[in-house]
Image (tube, rainbow, N blue to C red; front, side, top):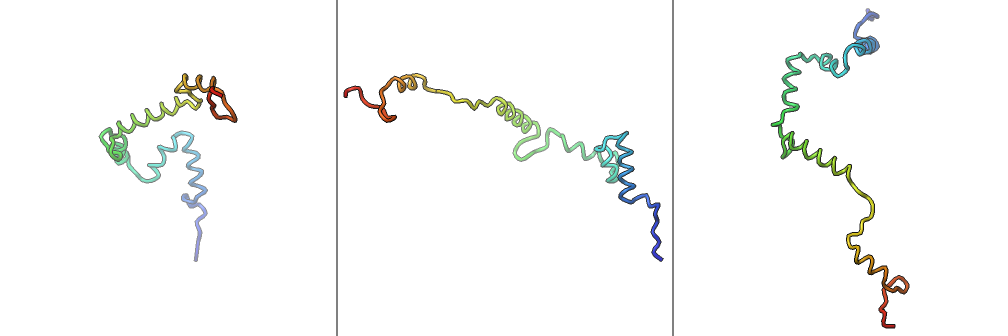
Length: 109
């Protein structure tokens, strides 16, 4: 007497159709907590902890960590990968000296 109900509203196909229909009107991110069975009060309770400035992330607070991440991203965007001569006078002197097989030689020869 195994009767299968073909009009079961909780089949995977029906759930996907319902999600597609609701996605036209509601953002999916808003729909997920409802599907999980969380009430509005529960969601607000959990959200108060997510973005609190006093929350510790390792040794840093949330705001301190955000400042460090912003500073890192600025430095990353300003990186220079071109060669830079720190000692221009040494480069000029080396170019003017005599060489033999790539090595410097004295002028006394």
